[in-house]
Structure formats: C-alpha cells, structure tokens
Image (cartoon, rainbow, N blue to C red; front, side):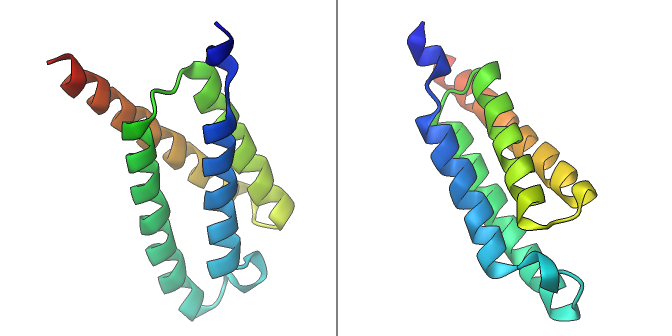
Length: 109
C-alpha cells in the first residue's frame, strides 16, 4: 500500500522535464522567433521522454496527479504564462496516461 504513494520516479521525471525546458527555452525568451522552433523541438523531446516514462512505469492516479501538479507549479514559478503551464501539464499527463494504458494492454496479452 505504501508503494502507492511512492513518488521518487515521478518527482525526478517532473523536475528533469521542467529543467530541460527552462534551460532550452527560458520563459523570458519565449516570444522570439527562434524560441518557437526551440520550443517545438524541446516539446517533442519532452513528450517522447514522457511516452517512454509512461511505458516503463505503472503510475496510479495519485502519481499522475502529483506529476501534473509538480510540473504545473514548477513552470509557473519559473515564470511561464499560466495558460502555457496548464496546457503543457495537461498534454504531458495525457501522454503518460495513454502510454501507460498501452503498456498495460500489451503486457496483458
């Protein structure tokens, strides 16, 4: 039962994803033309990592909620607009949820 609340892997993934985004596309430079391309490639990389993470970890509802909350508030604290933080968080949790569901379905066959 205590494993249900274990969030070390979730916290490490969330912190790493946010750190990569802040490093590659700082919030104060998000509005430049060059940053749009950087944001696209960084987003692709983060979503690929999220897909791999979701396939390798079986996350429960608490862990997915913790991941979303941690990413959302870390992005806001870093200075990203609230709308951006909310949208990225939603997409990230969705990718992890879907990839986890695919992983469970293929493992049960």
